[in-house]
Every structure is written in C-alpha cells, then in structure tokens.
Length: 331
Image (tube, rainbow, N blue to C red):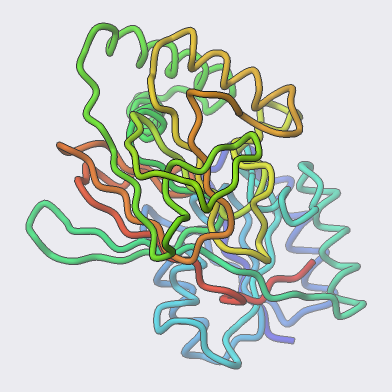
C-alpha cells in the first residue's frame, strides 16, 4: 500500500523522536513517503498531489489544523470513488478529530492502533461539514470541516490564541481558558450583534430547544453565539470531554448550539453543563438543532469565523452543509 505521511513539525506534540518511531513503524507495513509541512496551506497541496498520484493512504501527524488541510486537499473535487483514505496520528494539543474517531491521545499508542486497523483492513466512511462564505474581496469561497465551525465569540477566542502562538506562546488548555476569559472581559458591556439561524427544513429552526421540545413547534429566532458540530465532543479540556452538541455524529447531519444571551453568568452556566452534563447545555438561554442538512448563519455585522479550531476571518453570512459519507478514514 502506497502511503504519504504528512508531518507538521510545529505541532505541539510533534518531536523528532516520536516522528522517528512513527516513520519506522509505518514503513514496516507501508510503502511510505514522508513530507514535513512548510507553512499554512502546504498540507492541502500535499494531499492534492497524493490524490493525483494515486496514493492509497494519507497519514496526518499533527493537530486538527493539519487534518483539516489534508481533508480539504483530498476533497478538492468533492467526494470521489478511489480517493486516498485518511489516517490520523495525534500530534497537536487537543486532537479532537483523532480522539473522536477513537484513537488514543498519545501519538505512540495511536500509531499502534493505526497499524492494527490497517492490518485488519478496518475503515469507515464519515460525513463532513462544508462551508460556503465570501471573502472580504467579494470572492465566494468554500472549505470542508471535520468536527466544528463557529461564528462569534468562540472564533474570536481562536483568533486570540493564534495571535499569542505567533508570539511564541505554547498551545495549552490554559491558554484557551485565559483567552476566553480575556475575550469576555474585553467585550463586557458591548452590544453583540444578533446571529440569525435558518435551515432548509421547515420547523427545524433556531427555536428548537435542547431540553426536548418538539422541533415542529419551533419559532425562528436569533442568538449571540453559535457553534455547529459534526461530531461530539466539541473539544477537550485535557482529558475531559466538552459536549456542546452531545448527539452530533459523523453518521448524521450537523448539530447546532446557540446561546441567546452572552452574559458571563449564563455563558459560564452553559460551559459547566458542557463539562458535567451528558445532555449538554439546556435551558431557556439555549437554542439547539440536531441532524440538519443545511444551516445558514447570518450576522448583523461582521463576526469572527472559525473551522476546526482554525481562524478563517470575519464573516456576515456562512452556509454550512452536511455531506454524508464524504471521506474514508482508517479506524
């Protein structure tokens, strides 16, 4: 089997020693080529070349950003028969996608799990999310995401973390928590523009409650923050799952969590429910949707937008679509 190993040398858990162990283990079972990324967007190019060259498997060794780029390269022309499969060895700080697939957080343990899956021929096709939006220059753009997208405050936190990482800060859960707190402090007292949520299914609008209300009785409404999930969890806090949309699955459509008001107390309450409740956030401040084919988010003014923990830029409207069985992964 021909395989390409794409390594992000700047990822948090990517060391030369672990890389050598990974290459040695995979090369024993695969006809392996290894390439290190040189910057943002390089993994997309590598995955595109692998597809054109008829490679059977692309292995990502890096964080969720590396995985996202490879998925976008593999799906450059959309889901097509015969495209390379994707395998993941966690090398970042959070590794939501790899862990959601069932891999260990340890890259060494995950390598053993990957080799076992390859020897047994285990794979599955999973659904992904696809976002369409417009750049500041007015050009329509689209991009795939594997586990989440967000418009508003969570994307602002991602942008804040990225700026700190550029200045040399290490990516840790503590950095995200401090950045989130700083974002709320900076935004205290400011008017937050409403985000309108619409879907292509009548009755399945933003009014669907997380605590069991009949979706058929839903009413259109707005929120001040929103995340859309393609699986659960939304993220991890060290080893703890953070469940924004507990029912989200690679085998279903997109799920959504919206918060009507972003006061510190209400947001903290929702955060505690994400950590401690299997139901996830629920109550009067919560709007939720499950298993949606298409979701459109429209903001009254530009808001930060992120996908898979990578800052994309400010947007006023984003359309998110679920694409079932888009990508074959090794599990």
